[in-house]
Image (cartoon, rainbow, N blue to C red; front, side, top):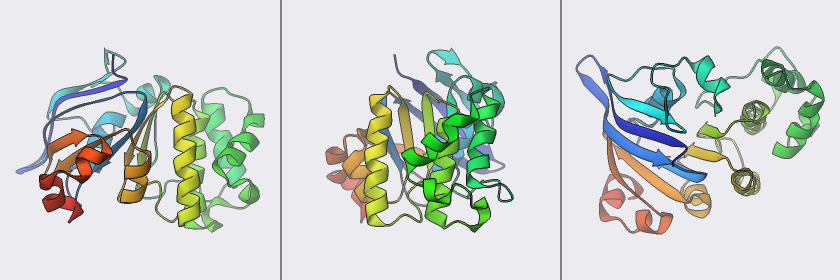
Length: 230
């Protein structure tokens, strides 16, 4: 059974349909969610994480219908998310940001150092979070998400601000997380990252699911090239 199932989800904002009858599933592995700006990717993340109720359709986590659950309840069930716009506690240190997430799950604060090491930003541990480079702040968001020990990790443009070497290290970390039995979903514009590290890719265009497949299948899909890859 899939970790996540999105069944016939539609989201309307007045006369505008941002997500239109999208059905997809996510298993343990790295799943890419790509498409042009305005395709509905972040809105779909909002529905999965509980920040927005769909106009119609359902979201299931491990076969449990979570459509009406709050973001807090979904987090308790194993859903963690990062955001396209950075959401760190700027007045706290990098280490304190991770401790807050650990304490929210009653996990020991001593784990914070290891999480920062794992994502590669231990050197910024004592820095105030709003003073670190954008790439480091992105990785801090990932460390905070991992602090909750999620089974489903939703990452919205996580490679923004990372250089090529950092992006490759990030991709390797994603594969490690999959080895721990986690499902990871990326909204990402870095096609090298998507094609090199994703197991499955879903393509949205104008709110609809255009196609799904392996990176090789997506790369060769004529409709995807016309709508997005160019």
